[in-house]
Length: 167
View 1: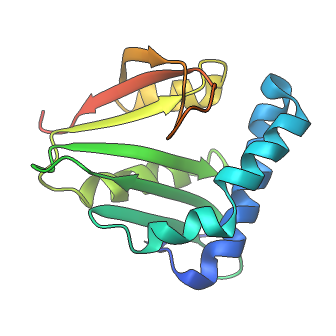
View 2 (view 1 turned 60 degrees about the vertical axis):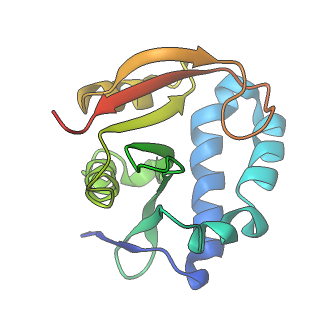
View 3 (view 1 turned 90 degrees about the horizontal axis):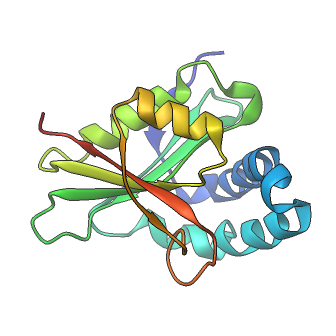
């Protein structure tokens, strides 16, 4: 199948939520357990949690679509007044669609959406070997660690990676 990257819309939210739930269970059940993953996805990936991304200023919310289903999703935003730092909040590819270049295409589109940015930052679970290898292969380097991945006090540790975009 050929996937095309496009802007996410309101009609995509249910499919995005389902994609995130499927991807999170496949990735994190072995790390956090299915119950904890279900709790996280019910909160972080609910329609109510996703909808504000559609209209958030200085952000890009995109999907990879083959015309029948979504294969991936990405969301990034800049709250930096000078728009030099972009935070990649999500980049997930459906498990059976991985290793087809969808992640690469989503990352490229997100990067292109912020032409004034000089750095991109993200957080990733250290035990998520696939994601760590993906980001390292795309030029990201570890710059720190956090005990609260995402927004708020999640209690989920993560490694912070950055990539220079102006190099």
